[in-house]
Image (cartoon, rainbow, N blue to C red):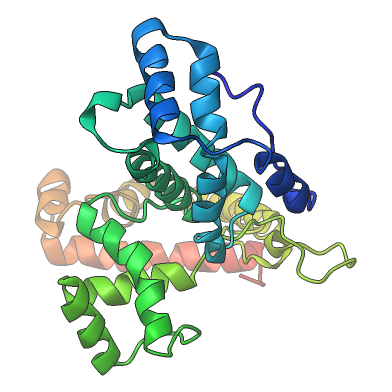
Length: 289
């Protein structure tokens, strides 16, 4: 079944025109609806399905308007509701004994709610039936309690809503915060006609290029100075400093003492003296260090 021949409501303010168009499709009498549904079910008659759909477009528009307070374009809501209606017509069995409108309402509502949940946030809002019920009931309950425009709810209000919906208070708090914090585009303007966007105000936690370059150059200088200073040491001093100060796992005084046949105290003395020579050599080459 295709929606190519159905009226389309756009986002340019033509809702009144769309509503006028769909009122031109007559409502169906029970017997006519039954015969059309049979022709679609038994013969896949597209004309019959088209009449079933168009005769219920007013129902979709009315239900879509009930969800307009979620901040989504009404044109999109109506389009999604029409998809739900077509699914209902496709699966409708006229022998069950109910009118198509009664059956289609469930499909239309499901299509609208799935669209709202998918559009509300990049983070999945709710997948369990209780969470979906909470999402769509919370605004209604807040309005009834006179706290529709409130931010975080007080404890008494949270407790009352949780009791009414039979969900934990923690879930009421979390869902309310999700309802309050819609996703925003990083390209949204901060001030109209100023050219600045939200992304221009984001703080970049990464190190800037100038700092990285300065750190690289300083590290390169330190390595060169250390290399030149190491040349002022004799081989034994250079080896002891390297093993004790420049290794990830430094050698112990005992290990180096056995290597050179001296006491661990003597190794410590050589290490201290060699390190002092290194410092003097580095400071002589670069007094600013």
